Length: 477
Ligand code: ATP
Ligand code: MG
Ligand code: MG
Ligand code: MG
Image (cartoon, rainbow, N blue to C red):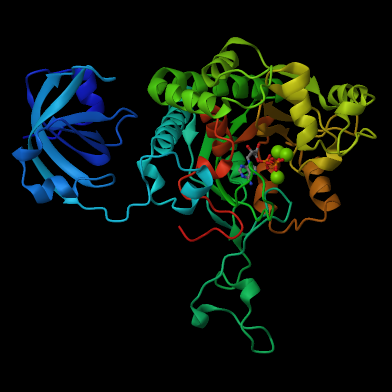
């Protein structure tokens, strides 16, 4: 008999037909000669209830059925007497596929910290299966959005000799084959030049390569893993994360901002439409966790937070306006920032970003025209000589979700920026070539996939929205 997934079964509601289901036991309950087994197969947040009489099967089968055990069950779909679902499965045959002795996931609420320690098993929980189905839907929607707009999906390299951000947060690449390593003049192995004699790292961004492609294909995007040697322990930073980076020829900063806002609304709208059950589950989980805790008057349930993104236009202010707002907020002692805003030119800390988004505007905020000195070398320099055509998009509860800019298309300005920041222009010669031949105004941005998934799922810690998080001290699984 053909296997059917639980999600499809609930949609088809085929009462009276025979089906086979394969999945993992969440709970087993025996009452008055009836056994109830809740089975989940990963296709939906909802479990299928299996009903049977204990005598119908050999005792050792019944004994072994416990939380975590994998089963194949065939039987007849019947209308449910009670419970949460319209249907359940009256079992004819039950086969144990895999037993689970001392299974660490018991049918009680485990802390997210505990589940992080067993990241390889947390896919079997309701919370994480919901999160990773939503992560999938978001990734799919990202490709769909750009495909519909006529963008070309570009695969950019992971191994690179270029520090695209100029921030020195790179991991170097080393070969373990000593034979292949070059030697220093003293005859020692030169670990610094270990990519067949060249110094290389894991990419921090595919932007520069995507720019080169955009100056030929016009509209492209990369979507892949990026790496940053961030030795910080925040709930927003990973050493390995996935970034979506569109680059567009003939777009100025305003076009770039308009695309980014449309893009975020599209992807969040897609999740709302296609992940309703998972989002409702996560919303309830979040609301349950707040019971009995101090209430924050501005708190909105998850689905309302997502709906609001679709409903209201984002706020858009310049860096200078942001500084004025932050300065004006300081006289109030209660609201004093740990890093006071003294003068124009300082970088915004996450407390400032959160104040603007969560207290002042209470919606996403786009900040434009940052001081040149605090932004990367490739941003378009403006007439005032002080600012660049940059934009950051800040989200409630998250902070920076997107960083982007109009790129510097003028060869002389770009060369000067590279030199003034003390970067190696030899390695960037290919990049400068794109400005030497047929340069055009162009723009792009980078979105951290995990921060978007955090926003959509309401998960507090970035480690809980990537299957196997890579953070300092965490590379085992
Ligand atoms: P932050 O200020 O939060 O450190 P950033 O300005 O260094 O971020 P960008 O270089 O602008 O980051 O990268 C583009 C986007 O990639 C960010 O807006 C964010 O969504 C995401 N991002 C950056 N660093 C990380 C990280 N370490 N872990 C997860 N996502 C990240
Ligand atoms: Mg950073
Ligand atoms: Mg930043
Ligand atoms: Mg940034």
